[in-house]
Amino acid sequence: METIEKVLKTLAEAGRPMKAGEIAEVSGIDKKDVDNAIKKLKKDEKITSPKVCYYEPKK
Image (cartoon, rainbow, N blue to C red; front, side, top):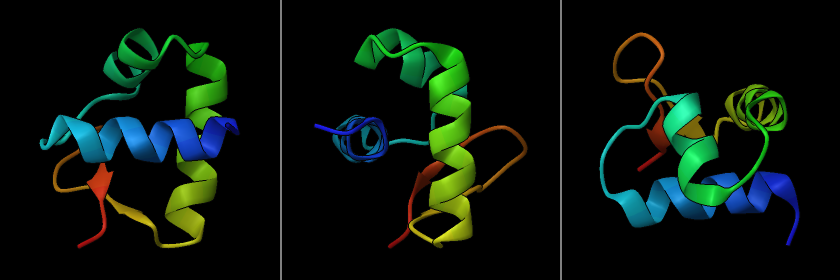
């Protein structure tokens, strides 16, 4: 599974907005890689940010 897919899956399973550090901790992915995945997911409009530094899958 690709990093981007893992990040999206982690967010979907959490059921709540998460910070990049939390995503990294839960998924076991390096935080730098999580940050890069978040940038790509935001650009592709697959995730939203309900408040600063928190992310969730787009509904």
